[in-house]
Structure formats: structure tokens, C-alpha cells
Amino acid sequence: MTVDELVAKALEDKASDVHLVRGLTPRYRVDGAIREMDAGILTAQECEDMARELAGAEFAKARVVGEADLALFISGVRCRLNLFQQQGAWSAAIRLLNEHIPDINELGLPKAAAEFPAYSQGLVLITGETGSGKSTTLAAILNQINQNECKHILTLEDPIEYVYTPARCVINQREIGRDTQSFAAGLRAALREDPDVILVGEMRDLETIETALTAAETGHLVFGTVHTNSAADSIDRIVDVFPAERQQQIRLQLSMSLKAVLSQQLLPKVGGGRVLACEVMKTDGAIRNLIREGKTPQIINAIQTTGAIGNILMDRCLQNLRAAGTITEETYRAALRDQSQPDKTPPANAMRAPGFKRPL
Image 1 (cartoon, rainbow, N blue to C red):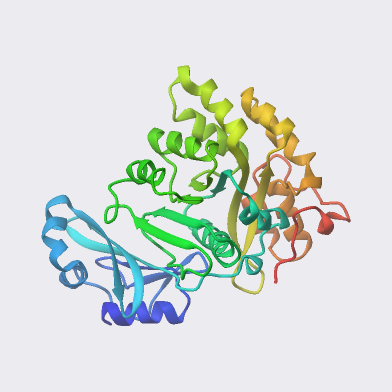
Image 2 (image 1 turned 90 degrees about the vertical axis):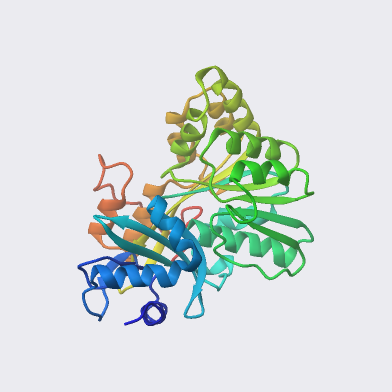
């Protein structure tokens, strides 16, 4: 099969990624699991031919550095391509980029998360591991703003995954490496480009985080992603990027600018497909005090006691999903954050816990 045929088949089977590796049949990822495709074993020469075809003029540069990261169309599908050498042969990881932006109400997000588009300023973090649906959640949130508000949305992405059609908003989407040099450079420039809403695709270095905090403090609504698994971990990750002598200042800035953290996982669903599990932390006075004082271990208890404003711990959400029969016991145990209490049974009214929404 050609690369175009492989990608077309992946699209038909709702796969997210295609992997091409010497000595293996082509594989793709469906519902989070790697599966074999109905094609022959790839030789080193076939892998190199595919790499040359996909990279085009960039292949010469890729041979020098051993890798290339490209955005392109394959079989009419927007894709992100990563070519790399391993053991003297070429491999390819192809991410199929979704064209459809789902409605925010289609995702199974907690009710509190549906409030994010209405925020006027501050910092909102969407966190989770790679492949947990962060980009899709952000796209739905931004498109909700696009449909209902007259604002200027500016995004910094690597790569651009969803392309927005302007409705009521002015929208500028900048891709790292093509439209701007880095997240930090793009974010510095953004402050001079009159945005109301800024999306920072990855908050991973000191300068990007520092500028994002400044933007959130100066009247902008900033959305960012962090590769962490909980609200408390997200705060620690941001603070720990800075040298010790600056960490108290950053805690103070975070306590004033952070509006909410949404941490998410995508889990195998009983009957097929995947379901979203979320932790929500909206900040109130008590949580802001804990952030400012560096008492992040106590945030777990604070989330537990603020369910009335829509906060919910990941483990409570998992208990709700297990009680509803949406995920298996095995999935529940594997996804738990607190492995010390795997057999904790949710109360009878857990299905009505704040922030819980029965998956479709």
C-alpha cells in the first residue's frame, strides 16, 4: 500500500496516528491502542522511498540532522509528519489532524469546564499526557468563544491542529517554526497584537510561562497546556521551572491570575471508543491562599471540599464512571491517581456529584 492509501485507510478507521517502521507491517493507533494494518512488511528501501516522497525538498536537511517535523496534506488529510532515523533506517510517525471541531457539549466535559469560554481574563490550564484530548478540548472552548463573542483570538501552536472558521471573532493562528520562531517569541509579539484571547500550545520554558502570566495579569484570557496529571502537579511544574529565588513571586502571580485547571485522561470505554475523565479545579480564596503559600499538597483536600463550585478530583470522576458501567474495573484501577484506595466505593449519590456528566 502507498502512504496515501495507508492514511486513507487510517482516516476510514478513525485512527489518530500511522507508524511506518522497517521490518514491521504498517501500524495505526485506534482508540489509543496500536493495531496492525493489512499491508506487507516494510523494507528499509521502502521506508526511505516513503520518507523521500513525504519530505520532498526537506529530505536533504533531514538526512543531515536525522529527523524532520513537517505539516502537510496526505491523501487530502491534514497531517503532522515526524521522520526520524533509527538503526540506520527511516521511520515515520504520521498524526492525522482532525478537521471537525466538536461542540463543547459533545465532549462529556464537567459542567464547570463549560464556563471557561465566558471568562474575561486570567489563566486557564488544560493538562494531561500526550493523546489525552487537550487540543480537542481547547478547540471546542475557543470555537465557543468564536461563535458567541466579538473578540480577537490569537493562537500559538506546534503544529496547527484545528483550523477555525471566523464567525464573530477575528482569529489569527501562528505555527511555531513557520510563522514565528518559538512560543516565547510569538507570545512576546502577541502582547503587541491586541488580542483578547491567547492560546499557548505548550507552556514548557521559563520565558513562555513568565510572559503568559504577564498576559493573564494584564487583562487577557490565556489558555495553555501542561503535560501533568493533576491540578496540584500543574502548579508545581510551573513554579519549579523558575530558580528558587523567584518561586515565591511566581506563586503570588499564579494565585492572582490562575482561574482554573482542567486535567484529563481518555480511557477505553465499555463497548468501544473512549471516554473523557477529568479533574477540575476552579480557584477560590482558599485555593489561592494555598498556591501563594506553597501548600500544593493540600489542594487535593481543597478540591474535595469545593464541589459546590464545580470542582471534582480525578479519582471521584473515575469512581462515577465505574459506577455508571462506562469503564471496567481494570481501567478504573489503572487510571486511579491514589492507588492506596482502589476499592473505595462512591456513595449512592455520586452520579449527581458536581461536575459529573454521564457520557453518551
